[in-house]
Each structure stands twice: as structure tokens, then as C-alpha cells.
Image 1 (cartoon, rainbow, N blue to C red):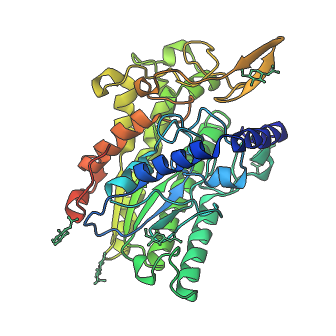
Image 2 (spheres, rainbow, N blue to C red; image 1 turned 180 degrees about the vertical axis):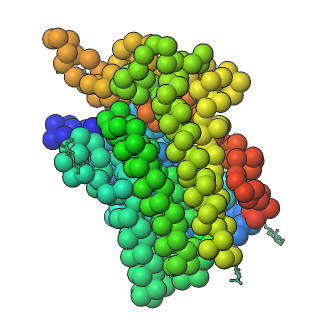
Length: 395
Ligand SMILES: *[C@@H]1O[C@H](CO)[C@@H](O)[C@H](O)[C@H]1NC(C)=O
Ligand SMILES: *[C@@H]1O[C@H](CO)[C@@H](O)[C@H](O)[C@H]1NC(C)=O
Ligand SMILES: *[C@@H]1O[C@H](CO)[C@@H](O)[C@H](O)[C@H]1NC(C)=O
Ligand SMILES: *[C@@H]1O[C@H](CO)[C@@H](O)[C@H](O)[C@H]1NC(C)=O
Ligand SMILES: *[C@@H]1O[C@H](CO)[C@@H](O)[C@H](O)[C@H]1NC(C)=O
């Protein structure tokens, strides 16, 4: 979906333009960035976060591997593309800030990364199951969950093998760290419209089994605290409302597709039950199912209740239809269509939107989700994060 040669070339051209900006301006920008990103010290029993996932929690891994992310990504908080599929911070960024930790460095980012407080193995378009290689060109990442797990093991090996270095985690961090897993959306969406019901259900059980297997593997290398996020109501996403076949009578009163949302609910039940099942095997571990689905559904259904305005309409798009989503012109891209130059630009008020680009959430939505999670209401079983840490307020 994002990966083609023209974009790579365009990315290089943009780079050339950026470096001609006055040095003093760049310097000022760096100072501003540093001052906003500086974490405040908090008393917290989590010295690190290790995250596994897809674009919903990628802090720059995919774009480190394929460097050509464009404006307007990052416009709200970073004021430039920052490797995140959003206008600003992701839920994982808010979580790190609340725990008094710096933003997570992507494991694939070789420039200026610091893993002493954790690492982010998530990359956009990642799947839980091994991807079908013929899909790489159409937007599936090669960095599936099993590969992310291997990268984690490699990082840990290096931390043990090398003398203490100030950009690697300390050896005693692995059993104290928080392990977060937020993945599965791409397995779901790449198959949901394409296979029969039975085949689809089978695939979903495989996805869930692979996630619980990953938790056990992480447990075996010392992991003890796990947050596993469930899947979002993709039947409300502007992109899938545009792309996935459905009848108008399959829409609920909020304009979301009932059929696909029910399939997500089915998957989430499987995940919850599977986590319940492995808990007894993992003594002294905390394995928490995080129901962000519930918060996201509320946001799409009644955005006004949470200080937002638009639910099923994307902020960044080319102006096509009620959903402002055109698969031919993704956010930040331009394309000639019928002799017209069509560009997908951002709205001027992303703070009013749940959906940034039709698939991913805005910073405003992520802030609502992170606040709700940090309040503790969406953990199953209850997980007293605010007792384990003096949480920094979300700002
Ligand atoms: C952390 O906790 C210790 C002991 O409870 C306390 O003395 C210290 O002030 C706390 N530090 C911060 C930054 O809150
Ligand atoms: C992989 O994807 C291609 C193209 O969509 C498809 O023809 C093929 O059957 C898939 N293979 C498997 C094993 O799913
Ligand atoms: C990495 O971060 C830690 C903690 O914030 C800091 O002490 C260390 O100096 C940093 N390392 C580098 C190479 O910047
Ligand atoms: C249980 O885990 C905690 C950290 O989560 C650790 O401090 C404690 O020593 C562990 N207890 C046992 C019996 O392994
Ligand atoms: C189309 O519009 C965009 C944004 O205004 C511009 O960057 C791009 O060069 C234009 N492309 C063509 C072929 O005119």
C-alpha cells in the first residue's frame, strides 16, 4: 500500500529540500523537540517497555526500513513526519510519557536510538502470522510477530553479552519491564473479505494461538508483565467502509458495518479466552487483556461525548465521499486522475477527528484511548498501573 519506487524517489527529493532550511531554524526546532519530549522522572516499577505490533504502535520502524514518510504525518505534535501513522502521538507514546519514560526507539532505527528504556519492534503493516510473500508489494510488512520476537531475543542477548552500554537495556530490566502487544489488525483485514467463514475462523484461532505462544516465549526470557491489546472496531473505519463490500442495511445507527464489527468481537472473545487459559501456566506473571476496542467503539459512535466531532470521516484524504477516503490517493500522496492532480491533504482541525487517514487514529483519539486505559477501567483482570507507578498526567 505504501511501498513503490516513485514514493521512494519523491522521499529523496523531499530530503534535499529539507536540508536547505536555515541552520538556525533547524537548531530551534531541535531545541523545541527536545524540550517537549523530555520525560519527567516518576516513581515507577517499570524501567522499560518492549512493544510488539503494527502501525497502531509503530514509532518509526517501518519508515526506518523504507524511509519516505511524507507530510502531513506528524503535523500536530512533531510538526514533521515522525514515523508514526498519525498526526501526532500514539497510545504507546502516551503510555511511555505517563510512566516517565522517553518515547520508544524503533528497533530498526539505526540512527540516534537508545534502548536503555525499552525498544519498539512494531512496524506498520505487520501481521501475527507469517505473511504471504506475494503480498509484500501490496502492503504487508515482512516483520511479522515471530520476527519481532526474534529481534527481542537478539536485543536481550546483546544486552547480556556486551559490557554495560548506555544505549542498551541493563540486564536486570527484562523481568521488570512492561511488555505490550498490539497486533492482529492486518491479519484480520487482509483476510476478512476474501475467505469463507470457516477458513476465516480457523485463521483467527491461529492468530490468537500465535499471540499466546509469543507471550509464553517472552515469559521464558524473563517477561512478567504483559498488556495484550484487542482489535479495534474496523467496521467503523473510513477506509474499510469504503473498501470492504457491504450492503447499506448492514450499517448500524452509527454508520458502522455490523457484520465486520461482529467478526472483530468474535476475535476479541477468542483472544480474551486464550489469555485466560494461559495464565495458570505462567506463574507470577500478569497477563492483561486490554479492551481498547470498547473505548474506540465509543469514540466512533459518539465522538461529541469525548470532545471530538467526526467519527467515520477521515481527516486526511482527497475529499472523496462521506468518508474522505480514496484508496488511490492515500494521505500525503498526489495522483493524476482523469487529467486532474488530486492530493490527499489534512483537515485543518485534526483535533476534531477520530480517524486520521481512514485507518489510523488521530492524536486526539489516541489521547482519549490512552487516558481511558491509564484510568484502569479497561484492564481484564484489573491491573493497578497507578499503584505501580506515579503516572504523569497526559498532556
Ligand atoms: C519517589 O518515592 C520516594 C520514596 O517514596 C520519594 O522520597 C521521592 O520523593 C519520590 N520521587 C518522586 C519524583 O516523586
Ligand atoms: C498468496 O497470495 C497470492 C496473491 O494474493 C495468492 O494467489 C496465493 O494463493 C496466496 N498463497 C497463500 C499460501 O495464501
Ligand atoms: C540513553 O538514555 C539513558 C537514560 O535516559 C541515558 O542515561 C543515556 O545517556 C542515553 N544514551 C545515549 C547514548 O544517549
Ligand atoms: C515475581 O515477580 C516479581 C516481579 O514481577 C519479582 O520481583 C518476584 O521476585 C517474583 N517472585 C517469584 C517467586 O518469582
Ligand atoms: C500535484 O499537487 C501536489 C501538491 O500541490 C504537488 O506537490 C505535485 O507536484 C503536483 N503534481 C503534478 C503532476 O502537478
